[in-house]
Each structure stands twice: as structure tokens, then as C-alpha cells.
Length: 589
Image 1 (cartoon, helix red, strand yellow):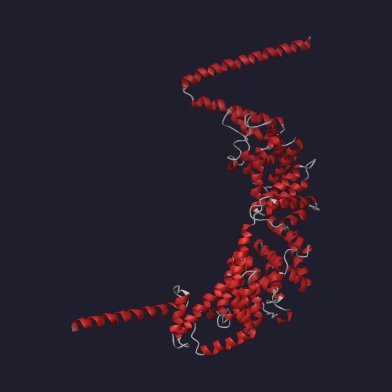
Image 2 (cartoon, one colour):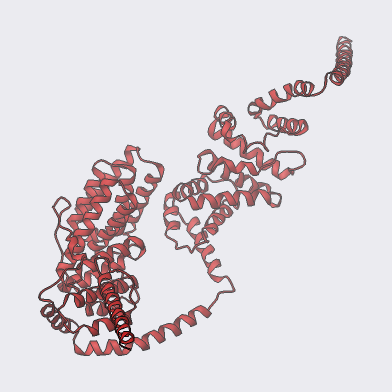
């Protein structure tokens, strides 16, 4: 019995030791990076079990809870709920967790650059109450920008500059930082540097126009000089031209601060003056847990500060209205999901807007800028290309205005280039439905895009130039297309382009070699439209075809067939000589 009791006691001691080790392992897992995931309920129970609120274990768990709360609030903020998120954010100890808050803002902005103005508005509100938090975030953004600039990391540089631009718009950062950054980017201009500068001015140009218009004029003069030098790519030149047009329109569509994000009064705004050349301390140790000997005192101070910021009444009202607001939002979302447009009214309105914009444009640059300002949903880019082609085809004669406009879209965005390629295939498949005037305009339009390399030449692979595969409309289209290409490039350059070995697979149906009949048809077609110079390779192929056939066949059959072919050839020569003698006799008579 005593042995059994001893065994039971040993087992109970082992179980208690296991429980203690599991508890210690859970507490140890709350280290630098937070450790394993602990459910909120389990974490709350663990915090309640700790008696000493100033102990290391309790501080670790509160740090882990603070990190989760800040990350959750920053990740779900948007323009509609920012006024509800900010009070919840002040519930957390932002002084203790300022490093966590800045890190979460920067990571979220890097992952979702479209919400940059929302994150900047949230930072502006926090900066008005805790300036040290805004200063820390600004330093970290500038250090990330400098690091991306040195590493030539374009993606991170674009995100960092966009964040800095909206911090300038919210007056968290002084405008001198923006002007200093633009000066550095445009001092020794590169393609990526100019593109980043254009994007930066697009985001904060409206604010710089109000705060320092003379300095902004100097930036635009530098951009004009870069444009006149002509050393940039066409895409970058188009971006600069678009920026000038945006400035002429007083940055319409790119306001400094949206009305729903203007949350800080002028007298409450605190602006930090920093320079890109200053030495900055990112205070990376604020992201790591540290034991605080005055933990309880600091928590009590923040509680008093939180009450002065939010007030007692607002605390109770916001907690009581959260559930009702969630229910109302769910009902509104369900009502919005039920509404569906079956009449395609929005599509008709979009086409009308595109048509009026094209027809009212002063020149192709003005029309292109106005069309780029139209907000298109995903999948509606095709409508823009179709409407442009439709307007071009309805003109009495071809206008170069449409070709330049299409070239601008193809050079600006690859999506438009792919859509024009689809339009080429669709138009050629339905070419027999078009009238002669519309057919001529469409052919000249695509000839302009091909001649300027706005459209890739592999689209010509859809054309099959044979007697059976073409109609009269298709032959007229091909005729006008290649005649316009010869006028744009010249017959020598066109022949050189069509003879490119890397593109022969795309031209195999225009210059067929599968059948001598199709080859002769292609030669005769191009010769009849005055482009016989591009058929030299096919003529050589036709001359060498009998020899190749003779080499492929056996010797006996080849000999008999060659004899028969020689006899037929001699008979043809004799008949042609007789006809020529008969004609000479008639002339003498």
C-alpha cells in the first residue's frame, strides 16, 4: 500500500511539473517576436492569473496584447471607418507602443499603397496629440526612402515617396523635405528617378502649389528642360507631359486632402522640419519588449491622458454604439449587394463620355489627358479602344489625330496595347461588313500603330493571304495597310522588317510557302499594288522550287519527268516564237 501511495504521489508531482513547464513555455513564447499564437480568451485568462501586475510575465503578455490590438486596428482602417478607428486607437497605450504603431503603418502602407492617404490622415491625428509618434514615423519613412534610393529598389522607393507626399499634404512633414527630395531626383535625371519625381509631384503638387508656388515652378522648369533634352524614354516623356497637363488643370482629381480625411484643425497641426541629409535614429529598440520598472505608474499616467483626450462620455457612447453600427453596416451591405444593373446604363454612359471627350479634344494630347482621367472599372479598358476605333472609322477621311491618340495609349499602358491587338483581330474577322471608306480608315489607323511600333508586328500572323482565305474586302484592307506602311517606313525599311528572321513565323501566312499556287498569288498581289520589292524572297523560292522537287524524287522518275517538262517547255518556247514572228509580219504589212 505504501508503495502504491508513493507511486501515486510521484505521478501527481510529475503532472504538476508538466503543468508548470507548459505554463513557463507559454510565458517564454511571448518573447521578442510574440511567439506562438495565443487566443485572446487564453491570453486574458493568463493575465488575470498573474497577481503581480508589475512582473516580467505580466508586462510580456500586455506587450503582446498591445501589439495585436495596434496591428488589427491599423489593418482594418479605411476612409469610411477612420473616425471610429481613431478613438479605439487612443484606447491603446500609444506612448509605450509608438514603435509598434509606426512599424505597422509603414508595413500596411507598403502592402496597400492605395490607402496611403488614409494612413497619413490617421498619423496626422495621432501626431496632433503625441508629436513624438509622428516624428518617429517620419524619420523611419525617410530612412526607408534613403535605403531604397541607394539600393535602386523602385517598388519601395515609390511607396516611401507616396507616403512622404501625403505626410506633406497633412502637414506632418514640412514642404522643404518634398522640395529637397525633388531636387535630388532631378539633379542627375534617370528614367526611374524622373518617374518617381512625377509620381511624387502628382500626389503633393496641389499642396506645394499653395505653400511654395515659386519653388514648384522651378521644379517644373527642370522637368521642361529634361523633356526638351529628349534623352528619356517615350513613356517617361508622356508622363512628364501628363504632369504638365495636370498642373494646367490645377491638379484636378488629385486633391491634397480629401474632405473625409481632413480631420485635424489648423491650430492643432504640428509640422516637423527635417532634412534628408540629417542623421536620424530609427529607434529600432522600441519594437522589442523591454522590462519597465515603472510600468504601473506609466500605465496610470496614460489612463489619465486618455481620459483627457477622449472624455468619459465618449468612452461609454462608443462602446455602446459599436454593436448597433455593425448591424447597420451589415444591412446596408446586403442592400447594396441586391442592386444590379441589368440595363447596361453605366456602360452606355461610359461610351457617351468617351465619345464626347474624343470629339471635343483640342489636340491628341488634350484628348488623351482627358480620357486618362475617366475612371474605368477593371475590364472596361476595351471600351475605350473600341470607341476610339469606331470614331476613327466614321470619319469621311482618315485623320492622323486618331492614330496619334492610339499611339499615346499604347505607349502609356500595356493593357491598352493588348486591347488594340484584340480590336485588330476582331476588325479583320468582320472586315467584310465594313464600307470602303470605313475600311480605309481602319487600315490606316492600324498602319500608323504598326509603323510607330506602338502595336507589335506579331498581330499580322492573323492575316492569311491566299485566294481561298481572303475576300475582296480583306484584300483591300491588306492593300491599304501595306501601302501605308511603305509610306511610313519606306520600301527598303519595310522589306528589312519583313525579312527579319525572328519574325518569319508571324509572316508565314502573308508570304506562304506551303503551296506554289499560294506563293504565286501572294507575289502577284503585292506586285499589283506596287510593292513587288518585298516579294524578292518568294521569287527566289519559286525559282528554286522545281530544283528542290527534282532532288527529292528518285532518279528514274525524276529523269522522265524532267524530260517531259523539257519537252513541254520547248513546245511552249516554239509556240511563243511562232506568235512573235506572226506579230512581226503583221506589223511589216
